[in-house]
Amino acid sequence: MSHSDEEYDHPIVHHDPQEGFDHTEPNTPAIWLFTICSVVGLILVIVAVQGYFDQIWKEAVYERVLSVPSEQLQDVRNRDAWNLTHYMYGNLDKSTNRVRIPIDQAMQSFAAEAAAGKLFYPAKATAIKVEEPAAAAAPAGAAPAAGGAAAGGAAPAVGVSGAAAPAPSGAPAAAPPAGAAKK
Picture (tube, rainbow, N blue to C red):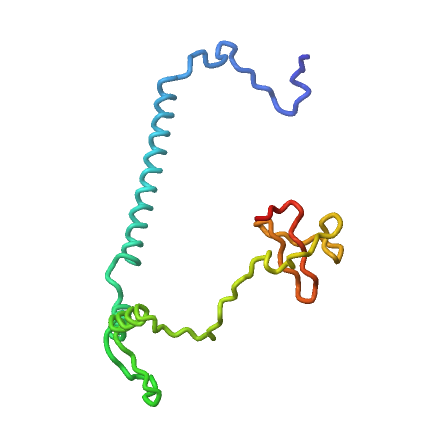
């Protein structure tokens, strides 16, 4: 559909038909050169930023961790080493006959007491309870109730070895299970 020039408020400039469009091919080598230079430049920037970050990181680690400790920290370490290697009454109460001894002597004393069995354990000595075999707890002539159940109607508790567990105090002892072999 063609329009006349009268339909527009401004004049339409017609170009020379000989002019047309650019008939030449794009400059491919220049485009490739620009692309390759851009990628190489980007890689160089990434490597430079990474190297700068690594250098700053190493300096920070050296400054905060690996460098010579501060004078205050050295004083604290020296004081602790002196306290571990010297006798002292210091803040300890003399009326209780307590004294701080060097750590080496304390370790030797502890090892000697342990070897002699003189270590103090703040607990009451108790005898070790020996479990009686389940067969000794059951009466010799007791026969199992119907279906192998105990007199109370419940099945006897059986341990890992297959022997019945001892009955609670005041309850009748259960007979061994029906499948248990007698020796």
